[in-house]
Length: 267
Figure 1: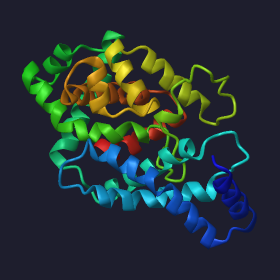
Figure 2 (figure 1 turned 90 degrees about the horizontal axis):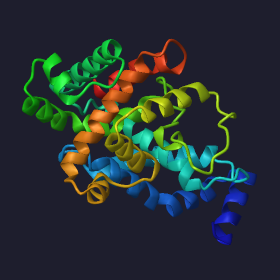
Figure 3 (figure 1 turned 135 degrees about the vertical axis):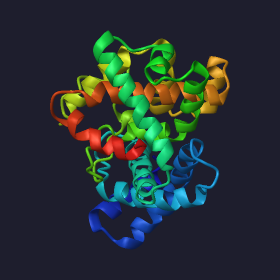
């Protein structure tokens, strides 16, 4: 953080003057554009990126007002999940996912949960397809259709319907340099997610880590793995639905509370 922006933060936090907050909004506006661009990749073409950016500004303002510069964390790291959360809130409120797609996503997620419970492992594509009475080709087509639901679905896992708490997967996957996560109320949920990610196949685990934690786009992940972007999108969707199925069955706390919120995002 440069000295100029540091001074601006210090002055705003001391005085709360709106004109200073407006300067911070202008300074960090490119972060909103970045997040809107990433979210729009997974959405149908009729969703306008400029609209997403306008939704994201609400999250940016929320982040500016709540951010404490004294904490040893970059503002961008703090703000990005909140900006993305504001975009997701608005997308959900305008009901942008077709009913048929929501129903498909729900059916696939329920199938993963049921098979996981009986097999005690993550089911294969063939097993899920058979359970849904689909051919493998039909199952892959279904994944493609619901892929843009999956792009936002996992961000709901920790929020339990509380729109003020924008804790997301990006803040949750373990950092190699991080110490024990003992200051978070949602520690158990985070540990459950980390365990669930750890049980996944290498490819799914890699896609989730690169997308949510490293901040890469699906296209960039495709280049790394040597597969097409649409294939990465399918892997991502499958991984999200598997994770939600694993977490929805937790006995208490945030896992159970999260189920209705995640259901709204993808069904």
